Amino acid sequence: MKNRSEVLREAIEEMIAVGKLAPGQHLDETELSKEFGVSRTPLREALIQLASMGIVDIRPRRGATVAQIGAQRLVEMFEVMAELEALCGRLAARRMSAADHAVLLAAHEACREAREQQDPDAYYYKNEEFHHQIYLGSHNEFLAEQAATLHRRLRPYRRLQLRVRDRVGTSFSEHDAIVQAIIAGDGERTAALLRDHIMIQGARFADLVASLPKLSAKAA
Image (cartoon, rainbow, N blue to C red):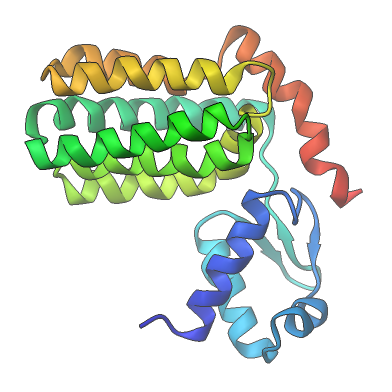
């Protein structure tokens, strides 16, 4: 059972992921304590946990702020994310069972439904589950943990990408090819498809950088 600080950490992390708390925004402990109806002790513990994950910055006499990522750092993190997902996909293509395939196909179908609703936010959550199933499908617990950790760190930016015009439809089409490659047991093709799916470069990078001010608007 999760303790109070863990529940708070997840709640604040989600607020950051959906943009309710923006990059660079100061996290007022008094306001957050009132909002969640808790004392400052578990709240501070939650903020320390978030800081250890790189999601929050804590500085002496300045308190906590939502971490900001510069464009170059963002590219570097997506490069690593792309390689982690490629490795997960390569192993998943070799190791997933028929039961694993069924779960992945169900996650893929949920993405289809969200796409048809034309709701980027709904698609985002289904997309997370889709990728999570690939991490699990690697049947390498350490790798899955590392991929999930970096995925959490990049959540606000992965979410932002889906708001770019036509990205949801393109994302789903890419998922479809990934699923086919995994079920076919083609590890190298799966890895290549996932790497391209995650990497931000060219027009995608330009679109993301152009959108960053929107993500940070509440911090101003």
